[in-house]
Length: 236
Length: 245
Image (tube, rainbow over all chains, first blue to last red; front, top):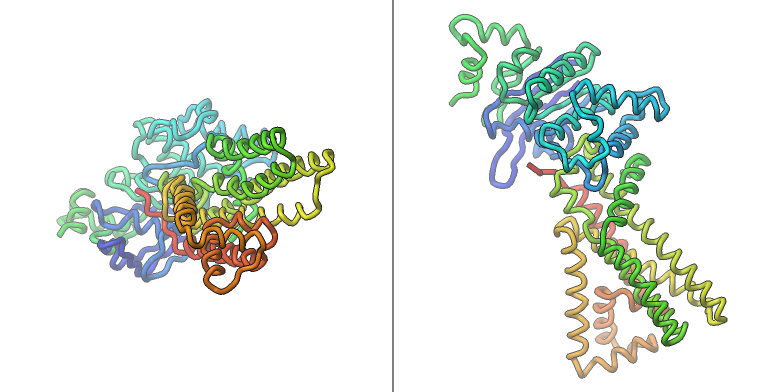
């Protein structure tokens, strides 16, 4: 669904990416791990078309791409319903039965599944708390019905019940044959749901493993837990 | 680059932004109020002259807050704009603004024309002057839009207004050329290259002067400047990256 090859990118004086390559398979959840400044967000932004690579290539399969940023921001002056309506146009209105009532019902059901108070939709997202802004970003993506969902720090700002709902959302998307790419520092949470792992360090891919290889890395003497494996891979 | 769904989005955003901006409302309503007042205390002809001359500035005032605010707010880093669609959105936003302000200007022109017809003072050449005022207005939109890739909300318009003020002060202080230059502009005939270049520079900063319809060379200059500004905007959009957060 998504393949990036040998990405390099300089941001000002910083060489943010040196050599990043990875691939995500359809119907899987892939976790991107790395220390602060390892190049995770820059890699995602290049994959999503917000930044241009200095070298390397990005290939995205057919279908709609969704994105939940670390700190979501929305067009000023528009309330929640309006933004969802615009997202519906972007997604071709394929989430609902085609009429306005079907769309509204689908939005309300999705909002409840994310523990998002639907009455907030009458307000502008700029007035939401960080957690509600994050949940609204997920809601916006659900309206799009993406084939590939990319989330940067997927649980940032969310309370434990909401984290569970978002985790269920990822698993539901995988079950539906969609692809999910998550960038996170929450190692245990990633190991709980991911089928594949990408580890970045200093702008380079240092590991790209499927679940089986990851378990091998974890087993025996190499690393008894995910933190040990991560520190071993990403450490100096 | 332009998609119908992006135009629908930018149209909605532009409409909300214009209706929620006190400065845009002041610019849009200030002109008809001034024109009506001039028509009452002076004459329809005087009011019409001011209308055509000042109409481009309605475009200029509306051009504040075009691009940089969206970039700085992080709003372009949204799922709506993945795959580089934010560039198409910015282009369609410029188009939506041009359509909105042109439509408003056309409404004002219809009203002032109806007033002129009722008073028996309407001149057919007013249509040409209106078209020239539209060109000058679009020139402002294009350059203010290009500047807004580099400057924060309102600063783009302020920079143009400051440049205009500096040019006008310079013109007033240059006692040797002032009277001659304005006389040449009134007749549309410039003896020699020097006054032509000087007036060309003034036109680049204050394109409103072409509404007199006697300055076809300078109208061509404004049109060329408009095309250039659109090309500059396209280049800035192509090179734009969203580095917020």
